[in-house]
Image (tube, rainbow, N blue to C red; front, side, top):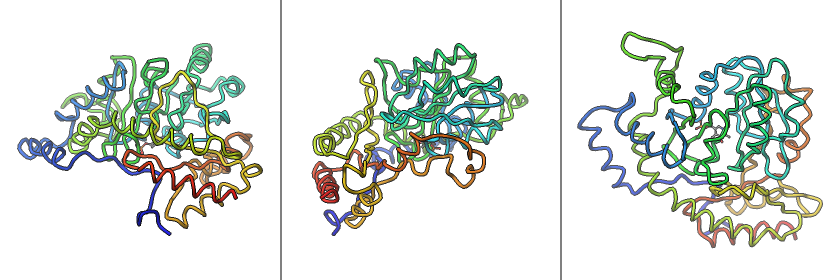
Amino acid sequence: MRIMGQEIFVTRPSLPPFEEYAAMLRPLWESRWLTNMGTYHDQLERELKDYLQVPELSLFCNGHLALEGALQIAGLSGEVITTPYTFASTVHAIVRQGLTPVLCDVKPEDGTLDETQLESLITERTSAIVPVHVYGHCCNVEAIGSIAEKYGLKVIYDAAHAFGVTLGGRGIGTFGDMSMFSFHATKIFNTVEGGAVAFHNPALRTKFRAIKNFGIQDEETITEIGGNAKLNELQAAMGLCNLRYVDRDIARSRVLSERYHERLSCVSGIRFFTPRADAAPNYAYMPVCIEPETFGADRDAVQAALREHGVYLRKYFYPIVSEYACYRQRFAGCCLPQAERLSRQVLTLPIYADLELQDVDRICDLILQVAH
Ligand SMILES: *Cc1c(COP(=O)(O)O)cnc(C)c1O
């Protein structure tokens, strides 16, 4: 049985009205300026800087290369501490920049880096911490900040999930030295593919511009060993259109999130994460933990049962990074019990602006049927 004849996935990309986007393309056909930091690129940088309430921002062609760019510009060496409970990109970026990732376990209540274990992982080779605001849940930025200061470490946040999130009224991208955002099609704000680094130091502005364009400062001056990671004008135009609707989308997802809580939070064996109460979330993800002893079925059984009805829940994040085939050897001795447990219990439920409340009700009904 399919719900209303349609399959439901965990997310569905937001798109602006077609005519609105099409109208943005006309000037590009006239100017033939398609990429290399064009008008839309620079306009989107300004608008995002305001929207995210960050002092400086540099666009990239995706979040992953934005993170690699941030790591490169931070001038790191040796070891970088991050968590295994994240998307492949975070640890890959560290390794691809020639650095050694060191994994810190996470807290069961929100999935973010467990700051109480940080100091025990710091060595004389540690140069930075790359915590992840996983699901948009804010890390303990205060504790991480003071430990970083004590040991002279850089802090670069993976804020790929945290677009529009504020903490104590401050843009989440203002914490630490730099923060990476992703504008991939599956994120709450998208430029099809895209990303950005938010940072504080205005002196880095020209470095960021150079690093995403082969290190070219001007025609005759190549200052950095940069790659090609520019956001083109067609994607920047998509971002400018989508930015007009993101507040509406977040408000809509909030309604859906509240419905999930209403329907499922009292069910024994379904545990919701409890992110910080002083943060304003973006409702981009709806993760729950299925605790099999009390729920009466395990996570995989719930996923399989809903798949039969055309509802595709995701095990986001399973497996954890230390269990990847490419990393198993490297992290063989790591003890990461909380991350491992979360990865066996977590399911992310569908949430996106044009999901209907009745879809949420059907999904909840189906989940409850698995328990009984
Ligand atoms: C999406 C994502 C990235 C990478 O962003 P892309 O824009 O897809 O390159 C990095 N980290 C996390 C946690 C993500 O979810």
